[in-house]
Length: 29
Image 1 (cartoon, rainbow, N blue to C red):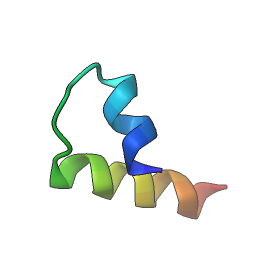
Image 2 (tube, rainbow, N blue to C red):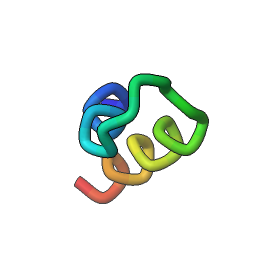
Image 3 (cartoon, rainbow, N blue to C red):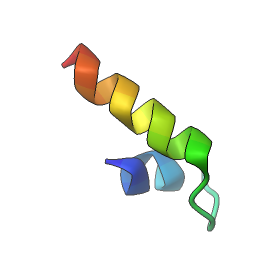
């Protein structure tokens, strides 16, 4: 999930923010 967010933001590095947002999206669904 975090990788999806990373690609979405067009960055090549995975940050903790990406992981946090991925977890948030997962909780919403």
